[in-house]
Image 1 (tube, rainbow, N blue to C red):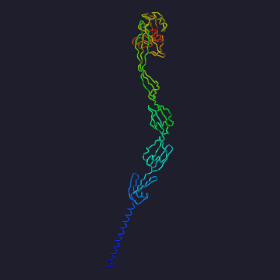
Image 2: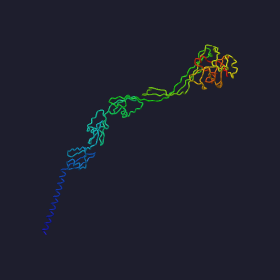
Image 3: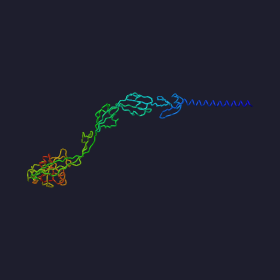
Length: 409
């Protein structure tokens, strides 16, 4: 029994000693890990991770943090008491200028950094499609445009612009948003290339139609008459100006009319002639009139100087006779060509058209014969009984106004 008890005691003692040894080893391990671990700070993609590691190799530390590193990424490590690792991700970037183009995959911060990395030079007048301090992104295409400074005069002002050097004048105007019409005038060939210091002048041209109203002057018609008894001339009827509507095509350059052309006109109001009477030097007597028949209606119907020649007249009227003329190509109110010695204008309400007429002075001396073919305002308003057509204005003025008898045949 005593031996059994000793054996149990020995087993218990061994177990205790074993437990003590295991505890000492565990404490030593914990002490060892704590003594050799370090704090790590990793910054990537705007994310920061902090942890403890016993690893010193950067790749193993990043594996521990489950962070992948790709080709072109920039990994930067700094150490003090802690380990600091920063990762800049690489971007695929292209930089071009004219025919030069450089593409790469690399970690760059800004557009300026990317241009510097490409090695493409940038001149003072060059224009970049992104601000140089803008942060790059993957797939970014940076374009450097060589620029020319040009001056453009248009619409009353001159301004300086910068345009890409490889553009034509027409492309440069489109690039600047300056509109031109097909009528505008430009001092250079729009197909030519722009160059540094080029000066372009654009003259705006407008072709327009303008409707204007214009006065039509009236004519002055002079008639001689013995009724004034040698007195100075006087206005028998006042003239009135007419009015016409004229359509004019105008070419306007920069607001100034350079040329105009009348393309149509329409009379709105006809002018009215002013009639001026001029007295003869004979105070009381009628001017002497030849008895010769100017244009007899027929040799059988009228005999020179004989009162019996009017015995078969259907009607006799007494009133004033005047004279008139007309321009070449004119027509009577009946459509005839007015003919001296034949055409006589009448008031058809008093003397019907087509009547053969013999006109004499008050003593039955024949002045002329003719046919009632025309009419006029003076006849319709009663200012004259007949108006005799003559070749010239001078003949009309010489005839003046006379008291006459009119025999209708």
